[in-house]
Image 1: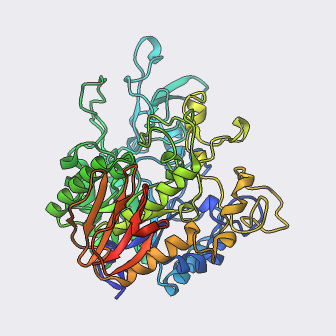
Image 2: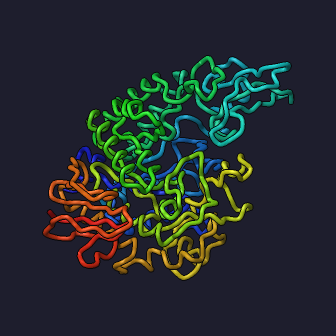
Length: 536
């Protein structure tokens, strides 16, 4: 039985994050679309994944790459139609691939009908009660209602203009001004999202990834707060009321999963979400530097908190919000922080790639589910030299370029051919890809790597095939083995994983068979920045 055949399939699944805009363009407009995804499903089936997590595919002005949703029950015309989504879900199921959709409940687009109605309605109206509208402070209400700052930079409040042209109330947006926050104290908001869940579950979606899951509820007093004060809008206890209701909806659809995107430093607080959600993303592991002791500490704490909740751990190396790990691992500082993207550090791509290969085997051997961000199976790196005039991320603009933003991890995939668009778009495409692809990616196309035994793609295909075939891998338990300093070694019930993060080769533990290695093993030794799977 494969992971995807189980009722609790998510416990050991390999889940592929698919950023629709950058995956495959069938229409020739430089933007990825659902027909393009459907045509490339064989690639994903050959890769050996169990499910696809689609980033938001809804109608959107794309002020924040689709996380500003104008209609939660439709498909952006740039991506296709609702019929295309239905066909894609069905085709995925035929390939044994489940569908996870992305729900954005903290905020919507300023073009959403509800927000447009709120702008037209008077202060204190039910329409405005779905959002956070407040009068300003100071003479004439010229100052924002409080001192909250946007996660994207700048103030978290924007002032409205009344129909007669006069300044009006302010509205809250923890992200961009085009993303007004919902007021989750509104029963209408709660009922609406429960209905949205049912809408997609009825269409065959197998799970939901919940964006910014810890941010939904706010302190109704909207207080100012300083660096040492508890956040009035992050991880409030009352957010769990929402997810208890969501879990009740999901439980009406057997085999459905709720996955939380939750960035919290407190492991106990993070674990509390596992009382309602099936899984949460493991960001401490993603952010951890390439250091054996720190990785082991994160692995141990992750497994401990998930075991207490009876939930599976999740493991992820990259996603659409962070620098690709080939580049991170090639820098002097191999850690990552959302508020500290540093593209001034030189990158050793050969070193980063070697470590990324080892990290892939380490990650896929850990107990629980693994996430793969599109392009990591090709060994793509962070594109750091996108011209300023071509950048799209609001973080870049709202910080005046101080934060390079996330465009570099979202560059369209290279599929085939010696030059851009590398098969991302058809040969007669009317427009180039929406972000420029590096010419050097000619060596990293899916076509170039297929059949090359030393390629990243073939490493991922082999690792995922073994992971599916070995009952010990995926969900389950881990036993650490004695190992030299800066070496990680553990037993997964007969399959051993050894990762050498030291500067010198080490001897392999006793084994009967080498299942897979991330690089050559000269003289039967494990070189630095290399990992291997062994049969005990």
